[in-house]
Length: 165
Image (cartoon, rainbow, N blue to C red; front, side, top):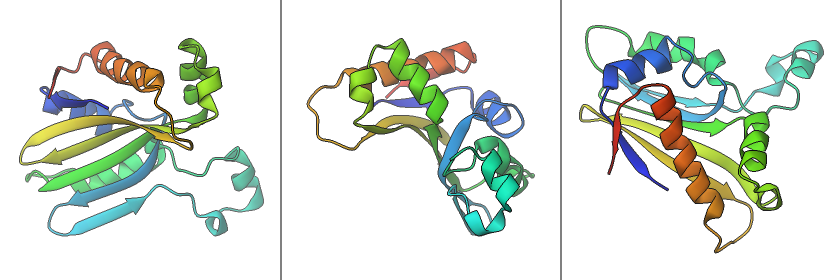
């Protein structure tokens, strides 16, 4: 687990809210505090979808950020900055498979329940914290180190300045 302070907050916010920066990540949870507190669960609500729509979800349990982003944007935009927000993003199933294969971690993959980025804005500071969920106990930190490096590379490739805490 690493924590990165995002130095280019406007670029990160633009990429997250009006760009495609996290569009292929699942939103697990979100909270936005402006004039009131708004909470979001990224869990898909099966009764909302008809059978054809549900089939197109291809077994997903969570909404993609691209599906939730317009609602978050409406809450955050305006003349005043939010007091606080936090989003928990999870790497999609297909990208998790790529990550495990790329880092030759397929054997470890059966014990990994998710690869996460927690984005928190508070006191005019934006921080990304990486994390891995495990289904089993392990002392091996190889997957964690690989995920931390991947998170840093993600920000570098998107030209978003950061520094480690």
